[in-house]
Image (cartoon, rainbow over all chains, first blue to last red; front, side):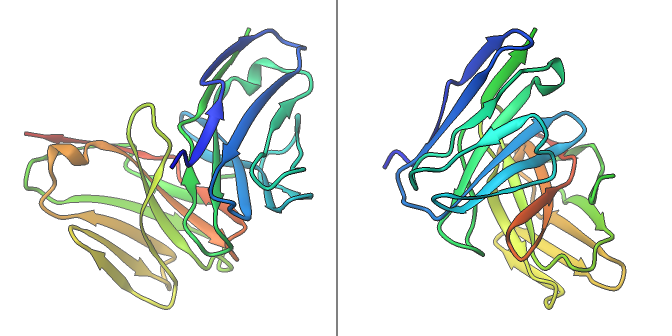
Length: 112
Length: 111
């Protein structure tokens, strides 16, 4: 039971570069979420998806792009990375609305 | 503006003691209030959750107290153990879509 996996676990890149964080779940959960975690802010929702090809903005979507062509994958792309996007990024999934969210172990992203 | 305000930022409790973490919110449209536990290097994991039509929910040593009129809710950990040392987050949701998290409380239970 692989569950939900994020890759890479660690990433260092430079400002202006494009970077994609991957999220894969093996449960066929309908809902998937992307959060960023920063000290003093807790977790903030970036984007979420209710099903394949359905995505919606969260609290802090600016500078990020998502897609969901397949139920099991929900990649997050930073099209032109900025230092303010240095953070720990968590992906989560839930079977349906109202069901518990299951989180991956995160990607620590540093932008120099 | 943070939608859910959490306190304290850190907490030290002796083994066997009670840990209490508080959260407050303003948006009365919130209809689901979960608590998450996070260990270093791991993602948060759901601990316990409550709906606003209930004033208290207990699961083992963990209890949520909910005060709808004051727009506050709290997590009580009874008989705290060193294994409970972690960061705890409260959260609130509208219709289970958008979740808003508190800033977290780092709990250290001393043996």
